[in-house]
Each structure stands twice: as structure tokens, then as C-alpha cells.
Length: 443
Image (tube, rainbow, N blue to C red):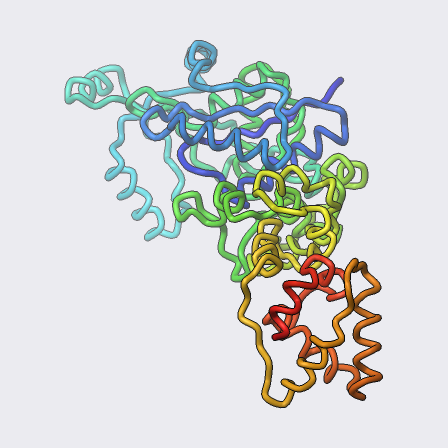
């Protein structure tokens, strides 16, 4: 049977690097197994869900290299959710509760004070029809809880191995709010069943939910999918990323000019047994990546590492990889400039700075003790045409003429020609500058 995975974000904000991790983990699994990837928007919260966020999520996933085989919206599947609700009510597994939030909070506090776990006491199951009618007359609307069987639920996690969740230690989960809207769990399970989802790969913060969800699958007459819970991506201090805070949003990373593959590899490989290293594509990575490689320990990521890793990725790009982007940026003599400077770039768009340096003007730097040397260098500047051998011919001549060598020879020339103490090899930069520009800067 073909594998089917899904990524089910709530379109209530922009996704960040932490959200991208489960999306990419599922995409890797689909690539590895030749399966299907479903993008399913958990948009049943009609007040907070926005089309602009859904559109942005689609755009972000496409930028990362994820191409969903299907797009689904839970808000369009209410009839299926209602049918499941009615079945659970008829079977006695979904029951109405009339407690207010304040009443439930007081009960939890009392339970803690008495040394008991603050789980729901199922008081609503003891209500008579008359008591329910009285609450209704007061204007109370019930929320609905799923009655757990209170047992050990065993499942084989493809990341964490054999797992046991005891639902006897859990409150019966609320599946329907008092206003009749659904919380995450019921639509998710119903849609997983109807869409034939075979594997649910998600963050380890969902492990304890899995027991209740497996019971819900069974109550609806279905076999639960295989679960896999990966470690969560956090920052260097161990704090998780947040949509609300805008932490490392994929939209911002794209706009800041990071390579999509660099971002994807950081999100996937951090906290696994594979090193965070450049790859040619996600398809290539899928050949060696396995979900079992995910570590049980924390997946800590220092955002400062992204710039360095992005630079490594850029240094490995050929001109053919970037020529369209350079054309969009209006880079002149793009191929020669790219070949000369790309190993000095952190981001592709940084090439604009080097184009400005080549085209000028630049503020040159000549120390007093180097003025005579620079004047000699101008006098002995070779005639054109120039190629990559011109630099060595010129500096060998100057070495013989002045006796200078090493840093004493090369650094004054670099400062006079570029105004910078670092940068690309001058043997490749010199032909781009040209003789006229070099004479102007040397004088």
C-alpha cells in the first residue's frame, strides 16, 4: 500500500523554522517511500484562520521545495465531521458537559490541593435529564467530551520505538466547544481516516495526545495510522519558535535572501544523526535520510549558524545555478563576476556589493609609507588584454623592482584597488576592474 502523509498547519499566522521541520520530515518520508504528501489546512477556527496566511504557507512550502500532491481544507469537510460526531454520541462515547471554565478551574485547584491529579471527574455523566434541561434553561450550552476507555494504549513509534500511553491518567478530551465548533482532534482523526493517511509524523509534544487519538480512531471503526514523533527544533537556549512572535518565519528568511535549500537542510538535519551538510537537492537527501535517524535528544539550533551554513551553500553554487537570479538583479558581466567573487558571498544578493566595487567609484586606501610603492605599481601596470595571469606577472615584476614580498607587497595593492583588506583573489578580480579603473585607483 502506498504511504500517505500530511502536514496540517493552522492558517492563523506565518509558519516558522519549527513548523517547517514536520512539513519537511513528512516530505522526506513521501520522497523516500514514493508516497503522497497532503497539505491540509486546519482552518475550522473561522475567526482566526485567514486566507492570506494559507496563501503564504503554500508559497513558503513551495519555496522550501515541497510540492503537495493534494490540497485539502478542513472547513470544507464539516459534513464528515458532523457524521462522526453523531456516531460517537449514538455510541455513548461523546457526552455533553455544562461546567463553565471557572468551575473547571476551581475543581482542578481543589484536586491539586488534595494531592490528586487534576483530571476531569466525569461529573457530567451523572447529570439527569432534568439537570441538563435546567442548565439549558439558564442559557448554558454544553461542550462535548470523548469518553476514554482508560487503558494502556501501545503503539510503535517510528522515531521513539515502543510507546505506552495510559489514558486512565488523562481527562476525557473536549472535542466540541460550547459554540458547536470543533477542536483539532475530531476533524484531524476523521480526515486522516477518509484521506487514507498511513503515517502521522509530527513533533514530540503530541506523544501524550496519541493515546486518546488512537482510541478515537478505534471508536470510529478505523485502524490508527503509524505514528512518528520527532524532537522539536528550538533556539540555542532551548526555547521553541513561535508564530505569534514571528520567530524565524519562512517568509522573512526568504525575503532576507537565504537559500531555500540551506533553510530546509537546517530544519531537517538539526537534531539527527546526519551532519548538517550541503546537499544538491531534497531528492538527493531523501536517498540517505531515514526518519529513524532523528535523535531523542533536543534539536537545538543557533540562528547565528544559518548565515555560515548559507554561505557554504552559496560557495558551492555554479553560475548556471544562479544565472537567472543574477539576470533579475541586473548584474553586469554576471558570469565572470560570479566566478570571481562567489566564494566571498554569504548570500547571492551580496554580489551587488562586489559589482559596485568593480564599477566604482571606491574609496581607496594608501598609507604614507606605501605611496612610492603604489606610484611604481601604477607605472609598471601591464598593458591590456588581461587574464588571470596578469596579476602574477605584475606582482612578480614589482617584487623584482622594489624588493617587497608577501603581505608587504600584496596588501597595499589590495587596499589601493578595492579599499578593503579582504576579498576575492585579485588574479580573478583584476581583469574585471580593467586597466583604466586600476590606474585611476592607484593614482
